[in-house]
Length: 323
Ligand SMILES: [Zn+2]
Image (cartoon, rainbow, N blue to C red; front, side, top):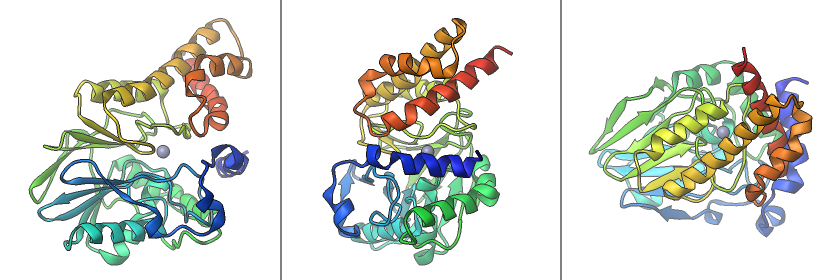
């Protein structure tokens, strides 16, 4: 099975398990009014995305776009999973400031985080879009078209997208981007959730935008470019900095304990798989034991769907460690 078929099948199978109780999803198409801004600090606002998979009613919107207000204009981190979502974010920014969106950061190459670039660019064609070099290459390659077509198909065309617009400006670990009176410090610690993750500190706000390196309440895909060990190491490095606000790619904003809680999930999967690998179990034999080990996370959306593939992914990682 190729990657496209595999993901499409996973998404289809996931529908009953992943929908949170949200009547609006079934009743009618969601509008901008269905999504509220939540203020985190003086300058930072987040729009909490629903946990539902992309469908016609949600227009492909499901992540946490973050708006940072600077003296030069607004900066958006992860403007959503569709052109529709990007335009929705533009509407939210306009409710906060009369200044334009001057820049966008993309956390990684999964389409639910960056397809909104198109919606931003329709109104603000000059907004710079920052991302990791690996992400830029992925969107310019086959992944860009793949995600665009997948989301358009799953949303039955309600995502409103026509173009895969990725980053135009590459940033990497240690870069500090000054925008107006605000500085944004970029972190990349190697492959983690993907090979193209960046996390961004809003300097002076005690806040870190983590993308999917940290998640809260929703498990997601870990594909061939992911690394459990790398994701754990990435969380260790940012937890040491003790930010007040960790703003995850999905789920509620929290402190250090929230970040540690997701680390614990990843670590439990990896260490359990490593132990069972030493006992020469096959990955399908490990699955019930790993599920038992991470039963604390059973209430997270996506649990039933994702744990099996996570075991397989961790198995390959442990196998690679042996050679
Ligand atoms: Zn992701």
